[in-house]
Image 1 (cartoon, rainbow, N blue to C red):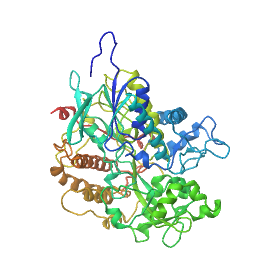
Image 2: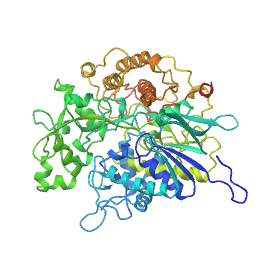
Image 3: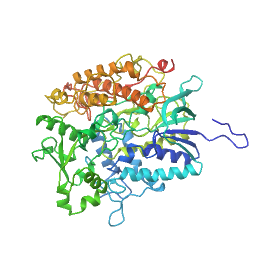
Length: 603
């Protein structure tokens, strides 16, 4: 970092933001507005992010909410969806501060849809008790928000306030400071060269890891890069067993499903079911009321698991069910679907389905990772100088199962708070204690920690520590007797590592339905691949895919390990061999937190 002359005063702090989804774009703008020097690195174009594909919207209780809605109701809905595993203080922050960041988006050019009276049009989505979902461009909210933020970022770049480096694959974080334990920059590939940039802090806003699974709503860039970067420098991670599968992703032809990258996923938003669409099987039976009293409006993990269970019961575990949106058109009038869901109407037509008259084939797809890099309420991780926000982070706000339309909101609220922590607090010290679900005293493990929070090098499937053990919530789903039958038809091919082999393995052994036996088989296969891919190492290669492969394999090992250690079903983590021993309330929502031993990071 350059040193300014005495006359000029101290140089501004430099923040390196990695990722260009809602958390990365918004935090970069806020930091630049506050006078920080900002470098924004994105592995593709600025629009290549999960945010761009988000349809459902952003949840918020505004100054003038829907009749009967309150911040307390939003908090209660979030806690309920999170299956008792949420960090209550993080949820309180998310829901009470939501309106501030909705206003912040407006400052940066985001325009939300209005009703006939010129007020914000608030939609209802699954597991929300009141209409509180803001949309931009109907079912293209993510694209609308991203486009507005990108325009503003480019304006800031033209004014010299943000430096944007596109097509930059970050490969490692550089360490500095007196003991070499502080993140001081990022190394990346760009135009066939190894480059680096130094800064006062690095903010990871890299999104998730949908490319771990055969069917995903995520774009090709979602390869667990941020999680791997953080793990390799010793940051604590948590809740990796909780991966949400969106229940209604349109089933494409087999050739398209097998294509590398899943570049153009077609998620059928929760908002469609919120408007009245129902799920039926091949016989025309509406089956969701048999699985949950809220039927199609049950939490996502319940709907996804119910679809999988129902297909297994029908003897077609590899099949799909159908979304019937024709009932909406019948109830709301001709043309309603095209007006309310213009993008989906266009995309389903392109896929050969007129959803005003025909059923849409759908199946669960990997959608959102609740776990991630552990942070406090200001984005600070267990490694000094390293911040995280959005899907890559684990604030505890999502619990064991994310509430619909809370993800974009989390990126906003905690992206802003990460910038506040960067600008206002001393980021040279250790992590401020984060808060545990329910009790408020969870402490993330330090990069220099040892004992229960540490682990040895991974020479096979990762032998990672377990800090807390969990217990099942009352009312957990009943075991699936034929879970082995469900996955046998999806079993992964034997042989060497490939992206497709990894996706098939994770879908078959660690997807919607799990068991100890299947997870053990997954761990064994991942360990066999490790000698060729070396997930703990940074590949000495200019090939972006080699770096992504190492990141994906590391993320898969961490996920499978966490899923094996949590032996009971909870939220989005379902095991047919779930432990069902009586437990005290304070035990069943405990978190698994893991980190690498610091000495291994610096070897």
